[in-house]
Length: 367
Image 1 (cartoon, one colour):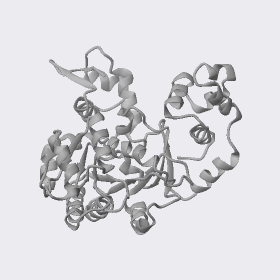
Image 2 (tube, rainbow, N blue to C red):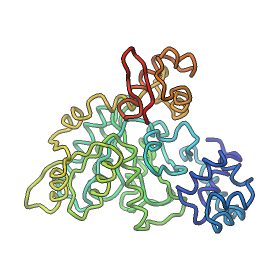
Image 3 (cartoon, rainbow, N blue to C red):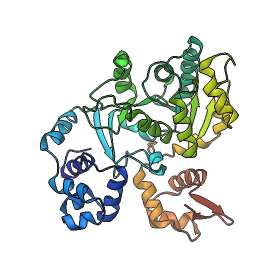
Image 4 (tube, rainbow, N blue to C red):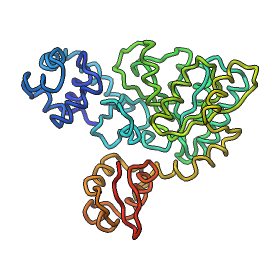
């Protein structure tokens, strides 16, 4: 993304004190862009957000805060993607509270690859570590990007396995972190973080210099599950944060998988609880792939160049796909998308419950 006035406006909006994601989305819906938000009168802003927040918007923020981020972006491996960008993860557009923007270090192309979350205990057993690495390596080699949280234990093992399993530009791994991307937490995973920055990606919704605050980690969990087609829990105690990720995955309509363990092991009790609640028991990476079927392929819908279909293409499709039935040739003529592109995108939307297929090859938006 080029550093321009638009990006500065997005950054400034994201840093306004007291303005959460819901308020920011209301402002964007009302005014259309961050630039228009800052051009609005105080009285108009107060009709959309609280008076104190409107006042903060009117004041803006110190230039130094934006300048530090722009300096960070001088590294070609560092990026920011906003809700308006084609690189923004499409899967996050379907969750209830997508972040206004994401800080990214590493490969932007991974943000819209088919992905699976692998999470689990920080105090993992040797068997759990081995399982996480083996599952991640095999699933990464099968084309899935493995997403986790860079924590000790299962998270780190999943990242390591996924980096070893990538091949032919498929797979790899993304770490979603609860700090600013100018920090590595935990520090013991610094080498792993550097490897992810080169072969995979690290992402965060939190501004640079954000420390590892306890409240940030449950928030980042919704992104781990939200970017994925499913969530595999390898080991988890009953108090594990991994159960939060699994719950969020269910709320977001994702599949939840769990690996069973000994009935005597505390690290297995969380997985067994999930299995009792309907999670899918898996014993091999192939079990996960069979459960997912063709769904993860559909999410990686590609254009003729082999790149993941960007959010802008989906937006273009929805401009012409309403609640009245329409055939694919008409959609192609009106949207400037090819029939091949539309077929892949419509399959994805059908699987996610946003589109239904009617007799006669007609499509209709239902969500």
